Image (cartoon, rainbow, N blue to C red):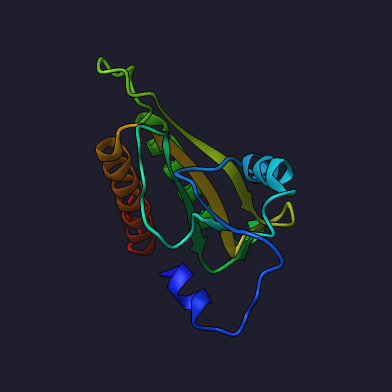
Length: 167
């Protein structure tokens, strides 16, 4: 589709156009940068087809990066009440930790962890917003999809429980 689109516009590349389809890329795109660096002499243009094409897996590790953002009315510590956002983030982190995969007897490596957490700017106020990120990776697409769905359900359950005043 990209090649058809490019052939329909008045664009003449300076050299060969290389389409690089990857099933996964590490943070910083170092693999793609290395590919471009080694092909610079014979590739005038490199088009990397990773985003927007859906899951492609040839036994490679798949990844789901999830961001969970929460919001609540902020309060000063002396006005009482719970720090809803930070407590909800803590409950989500503990629930995600319970999903840590056991070693797979079929040899599918899987990993799951919370990578970033941020909430609040001052010590004596409960924050109005908070966010955490979860990185899930596996060569088992079924495990990856199910785990991502469970994490989303945890986030919804914690948010609903907080909003309704339930624990």
